[in-house]
Image (cartoon, rainbow, N blue to C red):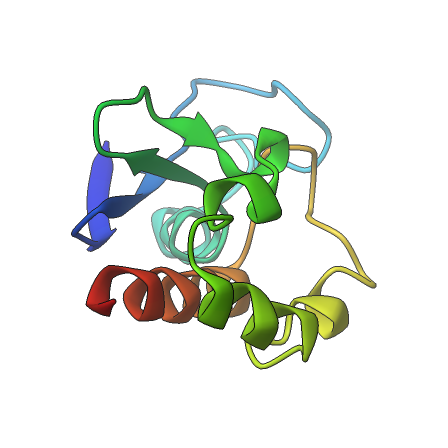
Length: 118
């Protein structure tokens, strides 16, 4: 399931995980957790996809932020000054390779919103 988190020249999507069992040790086994625990995990662990106009959507774990925003000097400068907080967020890293949490989505959508406004 996809949810739009920001829309414009760059669109950001939340892609929720779905599974019937274990695909990774970090993903809850549906046979061992109750519905509330699984929903909480789903709400806080998801993939972040971005799609620039005319291009395919890409997972945030595989994109180069400087390439994505490279045509906007203001956003790149704010990124370099850590206005969006990425330096703090990626010290810990994602739960697993393509999964991120809400604070990462918030930082990324702020950056995309600034880009889309220009």
